[in-house]
Length: 176
Image (cartoon, rainbow, N blue to C red):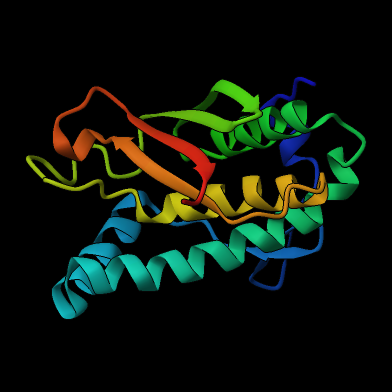
């Protein structure tokens, strides 16, 4: 399944100051707004508090997207469904997301994330900073559940440009 930006833009409508995509209200903001929000939450709550808060909000958004996307690619095999979602995420400007490994038994899914939204905003960090990536993790987890894989999944950020890696990488495994 291959998409281009024109397919994605088909459902965008504007009326009376409201922008929607296929009936859902959307907002276009520069990444600097998102980075400033994340950094301000970190200033107030600390990195751990910011991670927990943004993770929760992002997870809910991702789970909602997974549910809504069933009508678009619910018919696809699991691996293709994940690839289609990552392609949509890339087309919407989040960065380049690609499925590097897909293995179900034992579960190991690796997503490479180039040009993360945090690119240029953090340097020399000891921990990953891609907090909003949790929405991607939620979508993948929901797709796995839809296929009957109902155990708890963990997404571990094994590489992050904030730590000096050339790109970010997330490994999905069964939670131990």
